[in-house]
Image (cartoon, rainbow, N blue to C red; front, top):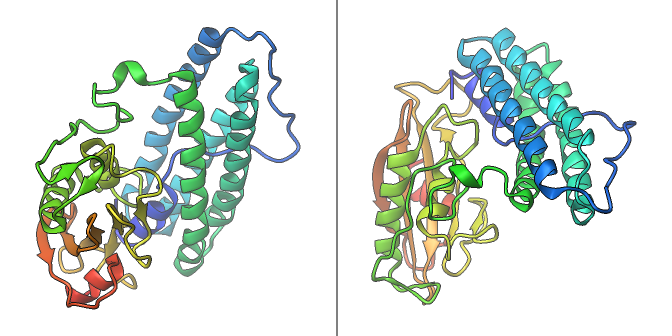
Length: 309
């Protein structure tokens, strides 16, 4: 992350992984008998270039001030645009046409959101554009992941646990997990706090700072795309509510006296609920287990409130 004008700003925008070009460009041309290996190699090259450009772009926002934040947004936007252009030049397998088109559409939506945020002339305008950028980034990230996985891109670098290669966390096999169900919510919170603290990194351009990626690698059978929900929502059975990192006071810059926190709740197979909070600056690595009062809503928001946030 960065400082206030940059962390909430670029955090909200650099949360995902994809950007796009505009609406009038032609759709990628599917090849009926495309060489899948050749397409995968071309996309892997484009994606590697994108990742490097993306990292360089986000680094521009490490300093204070709106100017650095908007420079970072525009650089990240350029990285997404170039990935879009490179993808359109690849003869993709016909069976991926829908996924690729969905990815390009998500990139286009993201580009529009980043253009608006990058054109902000005040910090207030920049922050106001953050939620839309964050949402678009999440959608684009997921769309790119679908295409990359379908092509097998990045699998050579992935740990044998089957995660996406962005974390070194290995799969855990605790006694309270059996048959895809959790029998002890409190024990699960303890492990999620430990995994999160070990892998959270404020430099990771996503609103969870890498925590959810590590959680999914640790519990791949439990934490799927639908089993981690926004912290205002109630945790699903054998799932988690809450994944976003916030500064304690979102109206002022994050710092030693205004650290970050991630509040979450889990529900086990019996319906029992427990919660936890990661907090600290610049990385929220301090762990705290939170007990909710009987009858409380099983949500990250309820945990945050109980913890005094």
